[in-house]
Length: 591
Image (cartoon, rainbow, N blue to C red; front, side, top):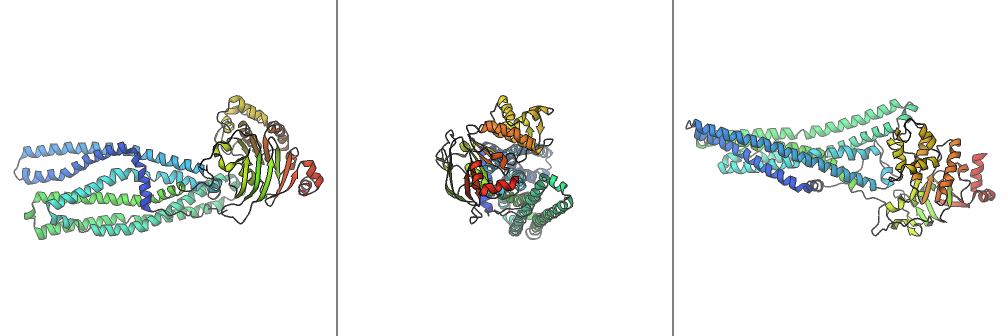
């Protein structure tokens, strides 16, 4: 199975920037009322900013020239009122857009999280958890400014540039052309910078993901690291990844920082040409001092939003790679999903059938894990699966749970093909306990109730007693209200296994699957648990995978699995008498 390790850059499906932006901005359109209000406010603030130079022109050319003091006061008062309205409008629109952009981030993160939950085991098996977290947390956060500025900055700045250009052309087209001569130079420079910067920011995002994955993996395995004294090795690996992350950032920033100088240079050249042509060629007397001052203000109003747009463009180039990574996950198809027309699985009697089932992982199709396996299990039967590691035992129970899809053949529960029923109805009637006794942060009660969220207090205690977990729970300071971490600090491996057992039992499943469920329990505790298991197995079809053959001697049937096939089948006594593969396994384990 192809795996992307924590130190490997991720491969990513190419998505056009235009498509990514359109898809991203669709989230904003869900807030039409807020956007319309913001646009209305921006129209007012833009109008105010465009009127201000005209008031200055009027004040200089008319009231100053005529020494009209009262007129100047009127102009000043009007300018002050407009300025206050401009500040109020700006503050309101920024507040509204901050709320909208944060709501959009919540929506994107929620959709991304929900989609990730639908993905199959293959997705999680092939990449580190830290790289998934990097997309859910860091990449989504980086979109905030892009979403907000796209309305509060992009639209008003584009509108301002257009309106200022029109006003300048109307007032004096020769001065306008002089001021705008450097715009093509700006456009060419920005295009070249963006093309190279986008590639660098993509690399930076991948290095960020690598670093995040390594730290998550390192902290998750801190006990192993400290046990083997591998701190120096992990420290060096972290240093190398951190350096790669830093260097990728520096390379991206060096190119992206070219936006600012390009804007400043073209702005300066535009101002120089304005004064050169206006003074030396056209002449100040022909234009008028007030008009010239207004033009000077307008050229600043023209280039200032261009500088803002360059910063926005830079920000967009920086963060669009994050949007691409998010949509890359969203576009990943779930290998296992409800087919069209899938129906709810009826209440299970517990009959399980495999009909000529073969299975291989999708990225290793030539390596068959199961080869033409067929068997039938009657309701209430207990089936034990034994055999060497990698023989296909866990694959069989994973196909029953439909964690993976059979390549050939059918898996039937009570005569219903598992591919034609909904995943929710299928898995809600299965009780699955693996050798991974993962616990969630929270109370012991919450961890047991996770098996069935509507379980009552009595059912929780009953499940705990059934697997002999109740006694040790009550000895804890807070009993069932004791807080634990996902690593189960303060609990032994056996105690964590018992809690996971109780969690499975409280679900009251129709079919019970125990995959090495007692592997971490000491012999004394195992004897107690076996008594509870015997009661819980009554009336339920059960599959038990165990390397410790002492745990499955009472199974109704034992399947000996090797090289993807069932070599032998029968109860313990029958298989011992046959003196075949099971007999050899039993002898090697006990002698």
